[in-house]
Length: 419
Image (cartoon, rainbow, N blue to C red; front, side):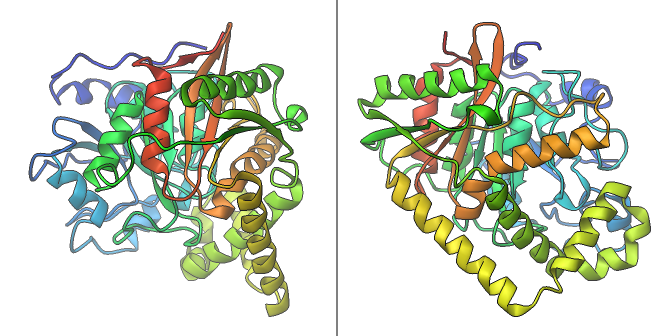
């Protein structure tokens, strides 16, 4: 597995993107550049925009040409696109994604799957595969995407990037094509946490944040070694110790099994599935023939879940509320360090059963912050000769504080070396 690709020299021309677009297959057919409308925190920053954000005069693909064929162009920019443009960002292209933003693999979008220059044997992860591909290849500085149950975090992990799942409800989602509303949040990918901070600054979430909040504890799991490769467990413990050194907090081992479990993952999947069907069921029924076999099977499950009795739906809502309360009781206002993927991104050589197995385990790891609506930052790490992607989950609305802490941790490097 290669080191994360170094960023292009400062001031590299936008034309550089054209030279590599076909090489990594990151952008949707008919992709376009969108010029800035002002100057601000993102002046000169090249953005790869997931094709779920409305751009005036254009129809988003939502991961499939049939979606584009059956919907009208947007009348106005989404709130995200407007903020990016007014802060000086150069949107260099609209990026591929998995169909209906409903996969963690990165293999089921429009045209050829994007290439992963960080780990060519792996897919880029989903559903924000194209954004991760473009950033890892140096075509863009910032990937602006979404995260439902890992759609930004998993591509970050697979492509050796820093990533942020934002606090649910913190960022305006007007003009965003949503998949499951109680989970969906904007997300960011970059080779440097400093670039993610610029994105948060452009949206107004940095100036109000303290420079460095005092955390009393750095929490790390003592019971997840069976879920991940040995070197990933080592990385989790080592990153927790590094955070202790930086913050002066106490390192506390905690049991995370109830939150990272098949039962919790199934709860997350049931609620998500009902919301997907409520949002897009009519379109899905009319266009099932255009979707991949795996998507048809999974969306069929969504249709079944949507028919659950009210008392079943209510029981799941109660279980989710208990999950949120229990996680808050465990973590308080402190940081929880977790593994993000079992070992690496989903491999291109795997068959359908292997990809499903990987997805099941990964959903257990990504589920806690999705169910609770919490921010989570992905940190690319090196432990000896091994790469591991580790996450730091914080209390709601601590997005900028955690990202600043990760910037200090990284020290200007594109991977955090732990041993």
